[in-house]
Amino acid sequence: MSTSRKLITLDEFTIQQTREFPKATGELSALLRDISLACKLINKQVNKAGLVDIIGKFGATNVQGEEQMKLDIYSDEMLINVLRNSNDCAGIASEENDDFIAFDDEYSINSKYVVLFDPLDGSSNIDVNASIGTIFSIYRRVSPLGAPCTKEDFLQPGNKLMAAGYVIYGSSTMLVYATRLGVNGFTLEPSIGEFCLSHPNMVCKESGNIYSINQGNSRHYDDGMVAYLDYCMEINKEEGRPYSHRYIGSMVADLHRNLIKGGIFIYPGDKKNPKGKLRLQYECNPFAFIIEAAGGMSTDGTVRTLDIQPVELHQRVPVYVGSKKMVEKAMEYVAKHQ
Ligand code: AHG
Ligand code: MN
Ligand code: MN
Ligand code: MN
Image (cartoon, rainbow, N blue to C red; front, top):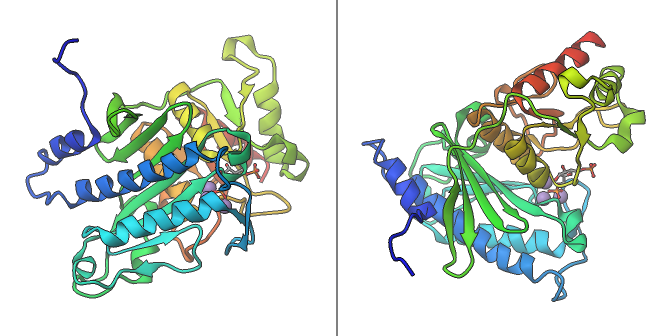
């Protein structure tokens, strides 16, 4: 076996990236290492989901009024514990907790960054063995160092994000990480327990032929959305339609596929839920940041997702995200029928 290797681990990669910023202190790379460690531990548990008594309803109801699965709680606690014990994180906010948590030890109060996460996305897919994920994002805090972080640190718009990413627990486990320098994907090599660069410089195609939306809700959709769905299904050979409809019901898995293949993912507001379902700070902003860094686009139908000023931690927004030309077309339909 040859020992010359092309393997670049996530750690090596972020250290190389840091060299391009002479003022960088390495804290962001350290933070990413902490998050990836927590996700490797979550991954171990996800892989065992069919074996141990960890699936099923946990019985508790979270702040969103949803029943939590055991793996939701496990993943949430794992991320919180790893980040609390690291020296690189001032505090966290999570989909599963009513309020943010400010870490108050002497290292944490002097840390520059806060982390927001959806510890387990697509939890309804756990018991059917379909792909699920973890979504995370990192802001530089706006509150002064030397004291615990504050709510304002977590209520920054997405255009202030330093980095965002996700881990997909799929047929293989991948971590996709975006900064303003671009988007890179790392696949977990289970035998050495390292995420290794497998998808350098990921690019979201300008256009694609996949649309992802919960079409079963279409009776609740506004006229613009219904007309856009008709457009997706219309036969037009020259323009590559009808598009294929693909919807797993796990945002990470649906957007991971669309990032690789090109496509649009929509969770619209509708007559029943005018703000849609997905959460700005834990789901929409991180993906808007990743997809934009890859050349794509994300909006709530009119406003760029990353420019929405969050007013509460668990705020929901409609989202249209993916290949630029497809998002623009969907916006045209929304605007025409307003
Ligand atoms: P979570 O499991 O973190 O609560 O998120 C579920 C979300 C998201 O992953 C997915 O895109 C969406 O819910 C699916 O919702 P519908 O079942 O309403 O389509
Ligand atoms: Mn949930
Ligand atoms: Mn989610
Ligand atoms: Mn979740």
